[in-house]
Image 1 (cartoon, rainbow, N blue to C red):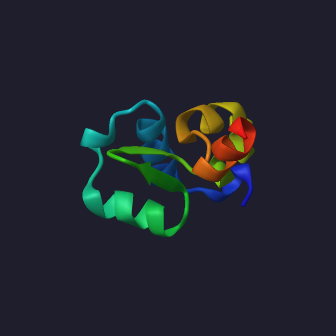
Image 2 (image 1 turned 30 degrees about the vertical axis):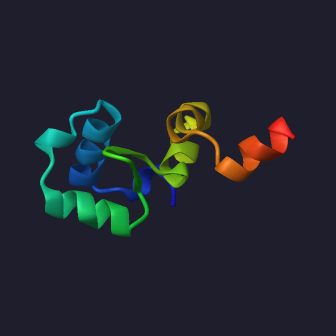
Image 3 (image 1 turned 135 degrees about the vertical axis):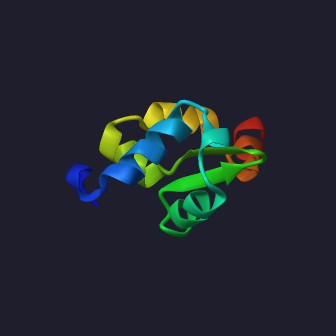
Length: 78
């Protein structure tokens, strides 16, 4: 996927997710974006997927929101 591959409506929805305005998004649209692997759900929150974060150059923000896997944390502790 490249930066110009997304339609206008999808771009607007992704912007709302990035701004934590999920309550303004229809559940059908959330499911569609999740099925396309453009967003991820962590507990009750939605975040942009790593695929979108890489295109936008926001890998650091993705890592901060996603957190680390338990195995990674355990490995670092031990």
